[in-house]
Image (spheres, rainbow, N blue to C red):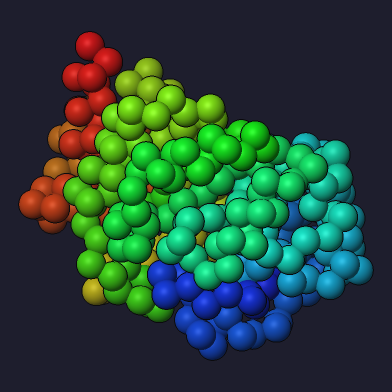
Length: 301
């Protein structure tokens, strides 16, 4: 089971595309570590853990190391930290840690400082880029070149933007697909791994799992969580009281979060979606990114 632990919503950035509200981003509440211990004890087999926020670098060091101690009771693999990489401490660079940097070039505040931190990082990092409107407007070749200049960048992944309960930018699934295509088509040779292309190959190989039955979240409120969509199709975290509740939700996901369009798709269960949402039509594509998969399949053939 993959677990994403969100110990706190607090963040030192105020990005206009963040899934968290201003109130959440200002909230210094942290998950009670006894609650975290209890939640982790309910998961039968943990195969991967990441920490994200909010901003992990904003956590006090004693809390960070105590949280790590709790995690180590149940998981002995490398812990991945997802960070804006603006607030660093030595705990980020320990041997049992991997780093993923949320970096959107000029679309994010303090981007120059973060880019400098990537350049000077003593360890290699993966980079996540959220396909917000400001990112979609950036020149892809320039972005690829800037990543090539960072010898510490191991991989880059473009993440899809979803409307949420904090903001509602006009980005369609087709916009995301076209942006990923630009990265694949870029004439600049990449000196890093392009994760989206790996995912596309997994889809075509039949090895990708598109359901949420292998990934659960833990929220600052001491609850399990899953990504859901409200009546306005806005993304939010649905909190659950127990691991059993999570298992029941994953069963419902396969029944209620998918439409006949999905069920009749040849990539059903193995598409590019990160969590199924009900597809009413294909006018703007779908969050399984069927059109991107088909385009890539033709490209490979």
